[in-house]
Length: 570
Image (tube, rainbow, N blue to C red; front, side, top):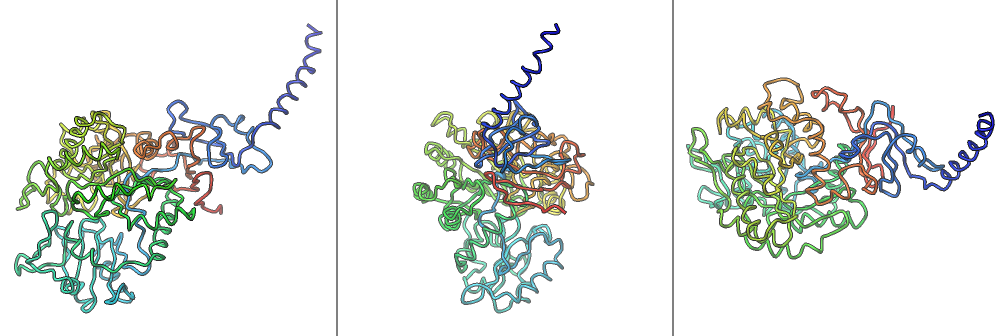
C-alpha cells in the first residue's frame, strides 16, 4: 500500500504533462462564451459554454471543456444573468425592401389622427420625388379610421398642389390625395380589377382617397423611382434594425428583380449580413394576383442566387385582409354587403399554380388571412401532393387570422408550415376597432389559433410581417404565451387556450424558421458545425415571468462569428 501511494505523484506528473500537451496541441477558438447557453438542440438543450472559430460553432458543452478552446488570442465572454440563444429567424417580414428614410413621410406607430396630421404637416417640408415632387410615405394605422378608410380631405388641405401616396401599416391600403388621382385619371369609373377596391363616398359617389389591395397599383406603378443609393441606404438601415433585435435570418415575401437589385449589390460587397430567403413575385409585395408571367421571373432566379440569398420560393396571395373586408371567409361578414369577401384565384387556378410550382422545386409561400383563403391554400397543397407526390419544398402559409377547426390538422398532414405573427394575437386596437365590427366577437376571439395548430402536430413559425407591426421577436414570444397586451400586461386575453409555452415560441423563432428556409442543418440551433449565428440577451428568459419577456433586450448579435450589434457596457 505504501509503495502504491509513493508512485502516485509520478503518475500525476505524467497525467499533467499529457494534459498540458493536449491543451497546447488543441485548436483554439476565436471566441468562447461561458454561461447559460440555450441551444434549441433536443439532445443537449442547455450548455455552459460555446466556442466559435471562423464563423462556425466548434464546441458546445460544459465550462471546463469550453475553456480548453481558450488561447492567447481568444475573446472570452463570461455571462452573469444573461443568456445565449440562436439568432432569431423572422419567417415573414418586409425588411429587405428597406425602411423609410428622412426623405419619406414616415407615419409608422402613430397612435392618433392628431399625431398623423402633425407628422403630415412636417412632411410639407420634404423635397419630394420626381418632377412633380411626390410625397411618398407609409405606416398609417388603419384602425384610426372607420373601416380603415381615411379621406383625401386632410391630404388635399395640406398638399393641394403636390401628389401624395401613403401606404398603410398593413400594406393592403393606400391613402392618396386629389392631385394624385387627377394626375393618373382615377375616377369613380376606374376599374381596379377583381382583386382591388377604389373606395367611393356613399353620398357623392366619388373616390374618397382610399385604395385597397390591387387598386394601389393604379398609383404605385407610376411613382418615380428611387435612386440606387437611396435604396441601398434604406436596406442598410433595415439590416441595422434587424441586428439590434437579434434577427439573423429572414424570409422576405414578394420580391421581384427591382427589389432584388440592392440586395445582390450588398451581398456582392459583403454587406448583406443576414440569411435571406426571397419569395419571388411579379407584383413584388403588392397585394393582388399575378398571371403566367410569374414563370418567366422564376426561370431567371439563378442570376440572383448568392451565399446569403435564397431564391427558390414564390409568394402568392389567396386574399386581402379582414380589416378592409377583402379577407376570404367561409361565412359572411357581419352586417355588411361584403358577403364572404373576394377570392383572388379560383380553386382550379390555385391547384394548377401550386402543382407546377411544387414540381419546379419551389417553396410556395402563401398569404391567407380568412378561413376560406386558408382552406383554398391547403386544398392547393393537397392537389400538388396528389400530382407530384410528397416534396421537401418547405411550403408554408402566413397570417392565418382565421382557420376552420377541420382545417387545423391539415398543416401536419401535408407538412405545411404555419407562419403566425404572434404579436397580433391579443386584443389590439385593430381587433377592437375593426375586426369585431367586421366578423363579430366570437370569430374575433378565435383568431390566430397557434396552440391548436401546434397541438395537432403542425410546425409553428414566428414572424412579424414588419412593417405592419414591430419586428421585435421578444414582444411576439411574450404574446404567443400570454395572448395579452405586452405593452400594458393587462386586458382580456385573446383566447388564452391558444397560448403555447416559452420553449415552443423560441423554436418557432429559431430551428423551425431555419427548417422553413431549408437551412436547419446549417443554423437554427447551437450545435458543432453550424453557423455561429447567435444572440446574447440581458436576462435568461426561462427565469422571467411571461409578462417580463418583452422587457428583456438584445445585448449582442453575432452573425457568422462577427459581432454586428452590441450594447456598450456602462
